[in-house]
Image 1 (spheres, rainbow, N blue to C red):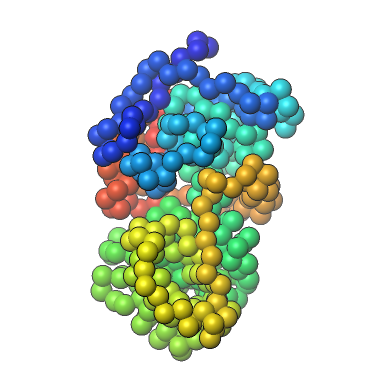
Image 2 (image 1 turned 120 degrees about the horizontal axis):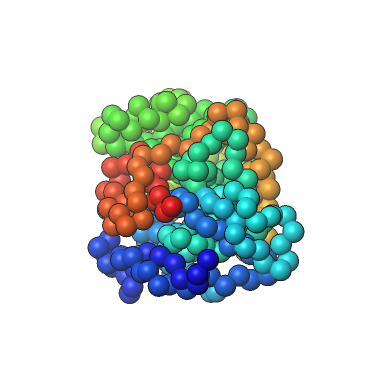
Length: 331
């Protein structure tokens, strides 16, 4: 192994075409608790787009390069790593730097490749499944028999949330923007799929639930959806915000929060500390990996691009025309 690698460089940030392939980037130097992964596949996620645009800076001491999830081979170990061996194939949640030939990740954020899954499928797991699990389970406290509304149901986050919620016995509503996405969500198990371009989701949810509302909402939209979400929630309902595609600054009538004892919360994955992410990894290994190995809750992959096609991958992500995950084939 020489000491240089290929990596996607987004310079000072901007439009997708700002990205170039840098061929002489230094291979990451490992911290004691990290492993070095020779990347085979990396996932493309909405936070990557925001970072490229200059709207989502990496946390201190993280790689300045894009990319939050990988699958590949462990090729070097930090001095404190005991749970992995050189040569093991893993998928990993990374603090950054996944759009590269080599990437460093904390060893406790690495998971084995689920039996029966391809490397592309494995690389599609970490960022999305960590995010969905932590929101639905740790913050949303979903329970069998409850109901969940997922906005952006055909996204990687959305399709994952639908499948996990169904696996744990919830009734699932979701919103999408066209018929192909309706069909994808139905195939994933959604009970009620609402085309928001043709129907008002608030009206549909309240009609189907006899005006009781849903117990939990997972929202990536924000903006005008926030008030409608509060209106759609049942008593003791929980609104989980994971992104703001329509913006985060809105005028709200929050009486519903008091009247219905609502909880409005949210989180992003990247700022969480290593121990919190390690706990999520352990929960996924215990509760979700067995389902994956049974062929359940599998990631849906829309497109796979070569590393030097990263501009096209980001253009597709920004178009929102995709259904499921967008991947980069690095090796």
